[in-house]
Length: 414
Image 1 (spheres, one colour):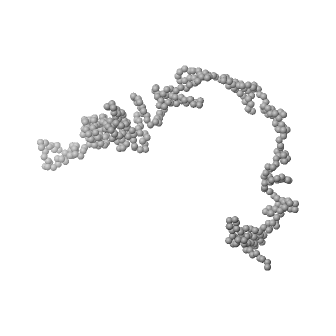
Image 2 (cartoon, rainbow, N blue to C red):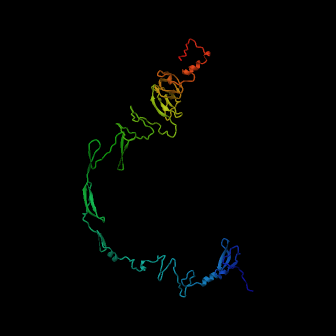
Image 3 (tube, rainbow, N blue to C red):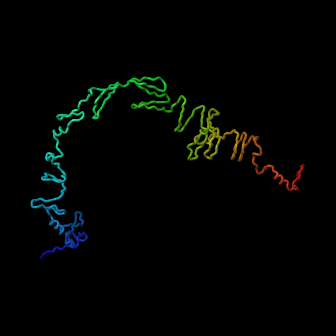
């Protein structure tokens, strides 16, 4: 009895999946709606990793491809040779190895096995020949060509050396870069050296020119054909120094050792860097020594801790950004002066001298003299009241309650 192999089938053209077939089971998609154009035969198998896969093994799709094979140049068609072993094609892209016989149209990827001896000369790209070179070269400005020899034409310049230690060469060059004339020009072998003072000196060739500084002021240094002139460290100017522009000192200390200091400005600024806080004292101080063995300091300053101005003396430590008001020897200094104007606040200590003007506030201490003042300049208190007619009339009202001894009362004329 004949054996029948039954395979799964589908009327569409969609390939089966591994879940639809068992191993070695066949399936055929008939592509019924397209007259079987896409009909293909499939089988399920496994790969080297034991994974189920679907293989295409045949079908009407492939038999149609083989049946349509032709030796003519037909797009999307399998190529077969004709009875002579030939076929027609459009563009063939490939690397060719070996001899190419016949006409080759297009790009040949490699001609490594050939050279120009196998290639005939065209009409434009010509091969090199001596005759062609000699015909091409006809010489030019300053160049001679004859019998394959290229030579530079002679100029009017005499072959020799030009220039010396006392002369420099002077040359003329044309558009082709040739030297067409050459002479020399003498150079000076000495020069005059002059300055703001002193006698002009002549420096001859071979002599050494020395640029010297001034001891304690200017120094000079020679390095690699360069002379650098600058101030010495901590220079000393023996004469007067006049600065016509502004003088800016960037160091942290400015020390003036002079007997007399003359300042044109009517006001001078202190603590100019204290614009973002109130952390340093403002004022001035001086040094003195009453015993010959102990430096003392006295001055006037605004105390940053409370904003008050203070006179001080006998401080044994040098004031820095602040005055140490509890430092050794610190004490309040005396001010001897005539005060004019309003004094607002408390005066603590002795006031010596004349006080001119109004004193407002508490005065603690001794005022030695108010001879230049009277009660008109002194405000009335709450107890010691000034005399007024109203106060007298009020006092005398109800005379029966008052006793006036040894007095005459005149009511006046009416």
